[in-house]
Amino acid sequence: MRFEYPWIKKELSCDGVGCHRGDILPLARKTQEWLSIHGLGVMVDGEFGPATEAALKVFQEKNSLPADGVVNVETFTALTAPLLRVLTFLPAASNLGQMVIGYATQHLAEYPREVGGQNRGPWVRLYMEGNEGKEWAWCAGFACFILRQAAETLLTALPVKPTFSCDELAARARSAGIFLSGFHLSDPTNQLTPGSIFLNRKSQTDWNHTGIVTAVYKETFETIEGNTNDAGEREGYEVCRRSRSYDKKDFIVI
Image (cartoon, rainbow, N blue to C red):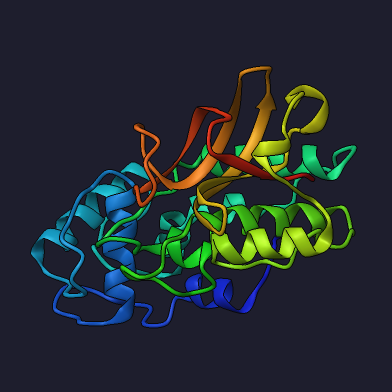
C-alpha cells in the first residue's frame, strides 16, 4: 500500500508516454531530473536531446529494459522507483515518535536531494506539495511530510498541522502545548523524545531551520533533516543525518 496525495499523483504521472529525442515536454524534464538523481548527470532543461537519449539508454541497459531511448511506462516506473519506495507504508511502530524515525530513515536511505536548480526537483516537489523554486526552502516541508506519514500509519491525529514555515511550525506547536524552549531544557534525556522536531532559533521570534530528532543525549542530539548539507547549513541541497548541540535550539515534543 502506498501514500497517495494529489501532488504525488501528478509527480508520478507519465503524461507524454513515448517521449523521445527531439521532444520538449514536461516528461522530458522529469526524465532528466531522474537520470541525474540516478547518477547519469544531464542538463535539466526539458529538451530531450542526444545527451538525454544516451543517458536514458544507459539507464535502461542497467535496469534490464529495452535500450531504445524512449520513455515508456516501464522506464518511467524504474526511474521513479526511489520515490515509490518512500511512499510505501511501514509496519506500525509502538508510538508516533518511533514511527517518525522509521519514515525519516526510509527517506534518508534514498538520498533525497535537489536537482535542476535551488530548491528544485521531484524530491522538493514531494515535500512541498508540488511547489519548487528558490523561494521554497523545504526543511519544514520535509519534517511535516514525515510526520504526516507517521500519523497516517498509526491512524492518529497530527500533533501540529503541516506547514512550510519554521516560524509557523513553532507557533502551531505553542498553540498545541508541545513547544519546548531551549531556555527551559535542563535535562534533555528526560524532556525530549526521539521523533521530536528541532527548530534552529535565530531569535526568540524567528526560526530558520528544522528537522527530525532521532536520538537524544546529554550534550548533543542526532537528526535526520532536509534542505541541509554535510556542514549542517540551512538552504543546503539534501536530506542527511547530523549530530547537533542544544545551543540555540527549540523543540516540538512528539
